[in-house]
Length: 171
View 1 (cartoon, one colour):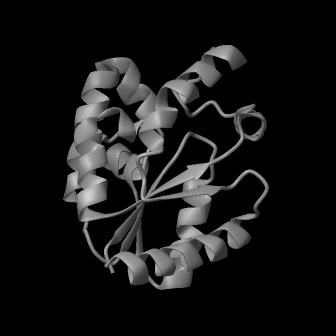
View 2: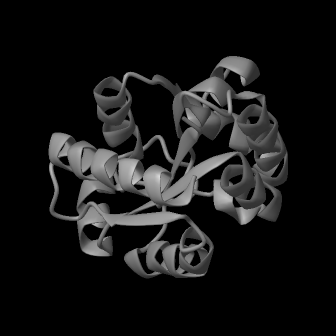
């Protein structure tokens, strides 16, 4: 099975759903943000502050392309789709999935999250503007799934069905 790349805005459930999906399908699970932190030997927020977004996106692309293209669930950072190369890579090498989540739900989930450098000290309107800017890029995914009202295991179950259907119909 080709690798499954989970994309979506921060707070959409990529990490939680990714782990549940990997367990359900018996696939290895990778989190690009965790791997970036390992490689950089510091948190993403510290890395961002020291080197800026451009250098972070370069490292993110490098990590993405170092991961297996088969037998994996790969959870990506919310902005990975900002580089066209990353979208092309995920679509060509695997199955790109967009986990959509209603912005009101996202904002509730992120309310006390201090680990995300792009939303610290940003207003609700600024966060929504980032989401709106990225939405057309997320929509390039093979599969879109709304996680707004789903629990982790329910989302993983529905996604597993959609993935199996896509694989049998497409490849």
